[in-house]
Length: 241
Length: 56
Image 1: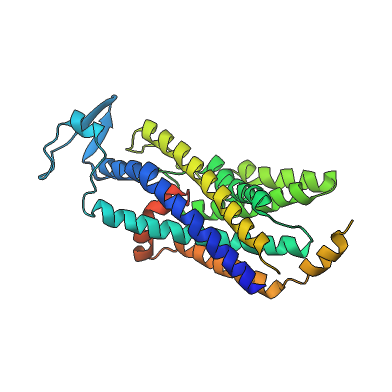
Image 2: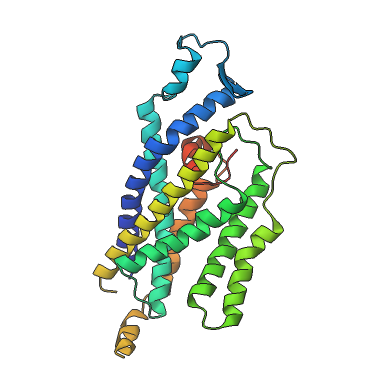
């Protein structure tokens, strides 16, 4: 049993981690790097005009030319930062994969067979609980965003993930209205309590970039979780218990 | 319904193994998403932002 759990989790984690890393490096990292330029004060946006302050010693591009190019990493090389991103992304995917596969194990104990096909649905349910539900209150943020104290946000995030997981499970496996109602209540509860927000917003990163980042981030996560479920379910179904 | 035999064979999955697997997963997620050590934070920084973990 342990072998089946571990091999399924490793397959799902490394498979989804690879895809997640490619998507993150090509779609999300450029936005993070550019946001850090606003964070450091090298760029700032005001009255809808992109301006650059005190050109860097090693950068003589004009503001317009610069805006059209991917932002250069100030201290760390692109390759080094990408390698770090690939590694940390794969680790995160492995963490998700081990939990998801443990849930496959619980499902098996209840006589539910997980396959590659149904694995995609399991993965998307994980996406709903771990990414989508917290995003409703605390959308993914670029660096330098205005936000409430970190610990309050972490607590709300954790509570939301736990309540949403229980809520989705109650709706998916409940057989009567009492359980479905409880599931809906659990899904709604974190948002009725409300996510912690700062008293006032005053981030230095342009809201257009922020919006693009949120959309891309949630999209990349949806793909990653679907792949996580697909690979995990595929390996799971191939092996004897 | 031949699910009875299937259920019998799949239900003896070890609960301990499942708990162990979940524990590994939660530990990794805690480390990648929540640990406040500066080194771990800096290493995981971009992924925390990209996957919506609360950061900074």
